[in-house]
Image (cartoon, rainbow, N blue to C red; front, side, top):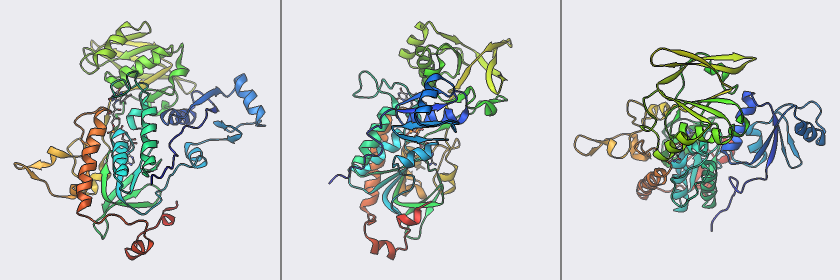
Length: 433
Ligand SMILES: Cc1cc2nc3c(=O)[nH]c(=O)nc-3n(C[C@H](O)[C@H](O)[C@H](O)COP(=O)(O)OP(=O)(O)OC[C@H]3O[C@@H](n4cnc5c(N)ncnc54)[C@H](O)[C@@H]3O)c2cc1C
């Protein structure tokens, strides 16, 4: 019988958010809600609509941000508090699973869904909300079966629902910080908040983290006009503004189009000589036609200028050495990413020099001998093809490898307390944080 938990989906009705447009914490909440595909309406704290809404709920001096969900009101709202109130899981229910997946992007979710659908007890641990990079995408147009395209957050929310529909468990806002083996040879993951969980097989799908821009002031202005990522949740608030996007890949191209479609005047800063080298043709064609987009080639952001604690302008430099100061209300940084896999490497998982986890053929050494080490119990999607559409495919391979691994290992009898206590395992209640 399928166990329908349905916490990732269906969506909740639209919630109302009252906050400050340029406050980092308020931005973070909007960003989370956008990436979780939770519909919301945002009201600037001193707008008439905000006043009416707050007055209706008897709030005189609001602690921002305020989230109004039907009759429930959350002041100084955080995503953690909302997820808890909405019944989302932040702690694994069991101490051990057949398959534990690290990372809830397209690769991790696909692996978890296939594992759960094959009848394995499965947990997925995600440090953020599920969706990965794909949740930053306003429209994925190259995914099979969606001729009109689909928002990345919607696609991944559906994937979460499908995973849960097969009984897979999704744990959010918990980072995996270490891995090793327990006395039974199972892979043990240390999860943020003092929790441990084991898997007979662990599939690691941590994707990448945004690469940082090395310009003074970026960190101070984060959320105050400067953002990493494509600004999906911010686009609607950028109409009529002067916006800069740094980057030349598909993610930058999508950000540029999304922001310009929302009515922002967008300058795209590209370090290289041309856009087409790293950007798909259909995106380049749309960018070139868009009246609100100005593409600046051989251009880099050199300085940020703030006023009242918010971004006001940027200085850009073209290769010739000429510098120009330009008004900028917002700056979105889409300059690619790099893996953050130190915790896995420290646990014996092999990575390349850049930190990407070795998988498949990369593990073959010396004429086809599979390298020894921890990787035998850990199957990891590779870096080779970085697109949403390639992720289910790699994950099927990972899941198949995991199935083979499990066929020679004992499956995890987590429903049996006697076995669990015999093995001195931590039960769910031990995992309460
Ligand atoms: C703006 C943008 C637009 C894009 N548009 C398209 C497109 O139109 N079509 C397309 O095919 N591709 C597109 N891509 C690329 C696509 O999104 C990625 O290739 C895909 O998301 C990679 O999936 P992944 O699961 O391997 O990694 P990621 O998406 O990076 O997901 C990894 C997940 O693992 C989590 N994680 C990492 N470390 C840990 C840890 N230690 N503990 C717990 N969780 C952890 C992260 O929080 C993250 O959620 C786009 C990317 C971006 C950024």
